[in-house]
Length: 406
Image 1 (tube, rainbow, N blue to C red):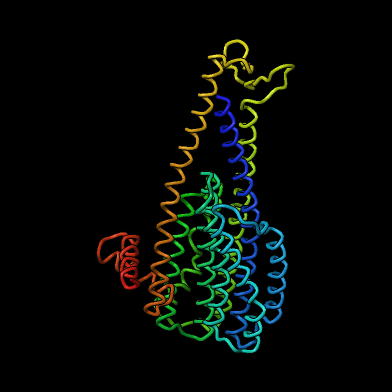
Image 2 (image 1 turned 135 degrees about the vertical axis):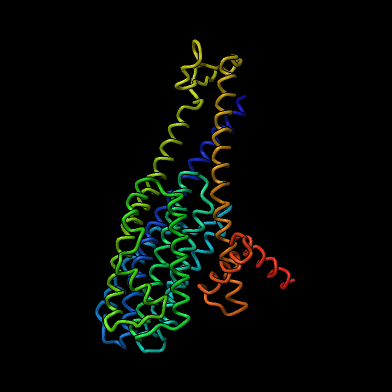
């Protein structure tokens, strides 16, 4: 029985260690959230600067670069130690990829300043940097071992992804309005981005708490003016002369409002991490605790008020009541771990679906030269035509990809 108590204690200490690592990850994700927002602002200013051929937003572009640099320092400070840990390889790899992408920002800015990149290429480069950061959030959500924290991470990731898609929508709209017309590809991308935003925010709504849902509710539907401009884009209507700045202003205000919701989600994540650690430490304190004796040792069940009489075990034997209490503790721990496993299985099924769809999109981009939005539209259209879920179509695409690679 003493061996059982030792391993029960090890189980609880492992819980606490895992939660402390999640807290550290949460601190990194919070810093990444702010960095992504500032990168989106820099991308927006750079977009207007390119579309206006350098006439507009020159000062704003420099200011946004400085904001990104400040946020970078916070991300570096929040990075965990680069120490090998079991099950930590992929997260470390994604951190390395993100740092590599961020190190290329000065070169990207120089190319933009020299006019070496057109608007689509510059925006694609920014999109890729932001995507590497979002991958960190996704991985954290995919590997979190605590249901409440995992839910908070899924809600945050889904919202951040929806907000990023809204930022890409802003970029495409600015380019088309500045040019005075929208190409067929831009219209197609816009339709796909709007649909993908809806999907991301639906997932967010499923995993967020009531407070976050309530905060999002007034923003869930775009304003009338945004919807009017969207119709111009999607139907190929005549672009207004002042449309670019008007569109940029409207979408930027909406993105800033989204950031307030995102900040609330980050705060919820950190609160759940700290609460879970506090609860785990309290539960560990209620476990069997060693007490020093004169000639032998004893174990006392703190808070074991369900036991009749003294709840003490000495080294000469085990009281039957205490034996039952130990088995009860082990049973409770087992039930709690099983409940967590069941809840995590549901959430990971949702994340698995998202991962397979992203892999199928990536394969279509590589094999057929689709844009990311066009690949998503192709999957959606095929799903509707065959009356199947997008996941089933994505799985079929990956099966074809595996066959071709053998």
